[in-house]
Image 1 (cartoon, rainbow, N blue to C red):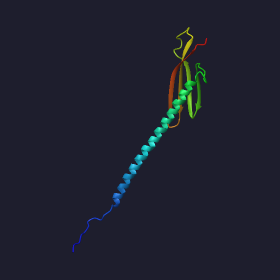
Image 2 (tube, rainbow, N blue to C red):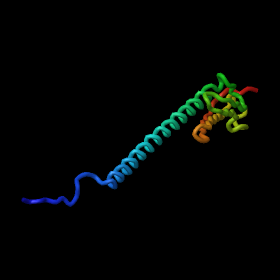
Image 3 (cartoon, rainbow, N blue to C red):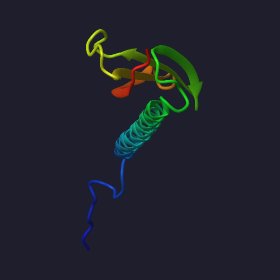
Image 4 (tube, rainbow, N blue to C red):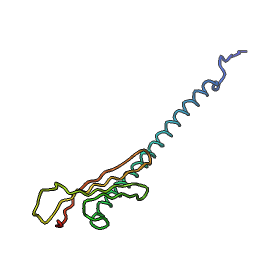
Length: 130
């Protein structure tokens, strides 16, 4: 008759289970962090796109909704605040001409997710008024 003695029982020790749970927890936390950062980046990109779209709409409205004359206009729309400045470009040059260049500068700001802003500038030609 032969007797075999096992030196170790089969199964996992408590320490091995705890180490496996710690590793699993670390992996889950890393995945959650990546997903969370991706969502925040997507939200900020969407906000910047909406700010750029609003700035473009305000520039396109100069001469239609806003007079094409030197001045400053301010307002808020869609949760954003904006400033629109119209200034003569290279004032004093081109005297005697029937047209005038104006610089149009729009700054759209948001307080969401920190202080974000976008500035759009362009030139527009108009008839010179005496």
